[in-house]
Image (cartoon, rainbow, N blue to C red; front, side):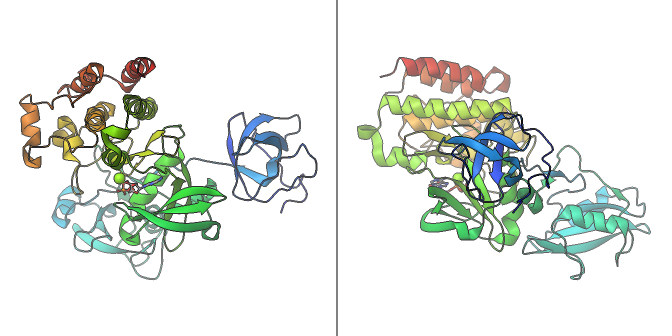
Length: 452
Ligand code: ADP
Ligand code: MG
C-alpha cells in the first residue's frame, strides 16, 4: 500500500470523465473522501490544486476525494500489429509466397495439420523450412524449452537468435491487404481490466455461445454475465480480441465490458442483461405483450449504438436480433463483438450469417458500416415480425441469388410504413445508396416521438 503519497509521484494529469481503477482499498479519513475497494471503477469529476488528489465519482454516483496514487487510469487494450501473420494458408501456398528465397525471409500461418497450432515457415539455402509452433495453455513454443505468451514475443526471440532454428528470422513477408492483430495478455493487466476469480461468484447457466457457456454471476454486488471460454487453446486469441475491442467502447446501448478473468480458463465479464437476447424476447412475448412503443424503442437503441460504432469506423459484421440483449429496464444493447474488426475480415470458415449479410460482403468480403446497415434492415424485419427467421420460405443457398435479382421481403404485418421504407433503403444493392446510421437514427427519433 502506498502509505507515503510523495513516494509515488503521480505524473500525468487526468481530465474530467477519465476512468480509473482502484489498485488498493481506500477507507478515507475525512467525510470529503470517497471510500473505495480494490477493483472499483471510478470516474474523474475534476482535478484539484493538489496533483495527488482528484474529485471522483463511484458507480453509484457518490462523489468525493480520491488519492491518485491508489488508482490507475483504465487503458484500452490494442491489437499488436502482426504483418507476418498470414492466417490459414497451406504449406504449398506459403512456399509459393516466400520469394525471393533469401535466408531468414519468413511468415507465420495457422497450422492445417494441427488445428490450433501455428507454423513458422522460413527460407534457408533456397529452401523453405517449416516449424510447428505448439500452442498450449496460452503459451507457445517450438522447441518445448522456451515458451512465449504470444507470437510477437516468439518472433522477436528468433529475430535476435536462431536458437536451434536453421537461421535467425531476418525479414517478415508481410501479408497483403489484411492486417491481423494479436492481443497481449499483459495489456489487460496494465490497462486495469483484470478481475480476480475469487471476487466473482457464478450463479447459473444462462446461455451457450460460440466460444463457450454464459453464466449469470455476481461481482461487487452487481449482477454480471460471465462468458467462459471452453476450448482454451483454440479460441483464446479470438476471445481476447473481442475483449480488446470492447475496452475501447463505452455507450449506453453497447453491452459494457467490466473486465476479464485470466488464468486457466479465460472469462469475459460484462454487464448483465436480464431479459436475454432480442429474438427470444420477441418470440416468447409476442404481439400480446410487445407494443409499437417497445419496438421503436428497441430499433432506436440499436441504431444509436450502431451510429456510435459508425463514428468510430468500427464494423460489427454480425448484427442480428440474436446479438441484441435487453436489460430489466427494457433498454436494448448491441453485444457480440466476436467478429467486429477495424478493416477487413475473411468470410472463410465459421458459420456465416448469410441471411443477415450484405451481398458485397458475402461475395467480395467487402464489409463496411454500409454492410452493417444491410444487416440492420434485416434486424428491423425480425423486430417487426416478432422474431421470425428472415426469408422464411427461401433455402439458405438461394437467398443471395434471389436478392440480387431484386427480391425483397415484404413488410411484416402491422409494420409502420416509415420502418419498411428504411428496410428497403438498407437493402439497396449499392452500398453508397444505403442510409448512414446517423441518418437512420434521426428518422427513428422522429418516429419515436410520435409513437405512443
Ligand atoms: P456467442 O456470440 O459466442 O454465440 P453470445 O454472446 O451471443 O455468444 O451469448 C450467447 C447467449 O448468452 C446470448 O444469446 C444470451 O442469451 C446470453 N447472454 C450473453 N451475454 C449476456 C449478458 N450480458 N446478459 C445476459 N445474457 C447474456
Ligand atoms: Mg451471439
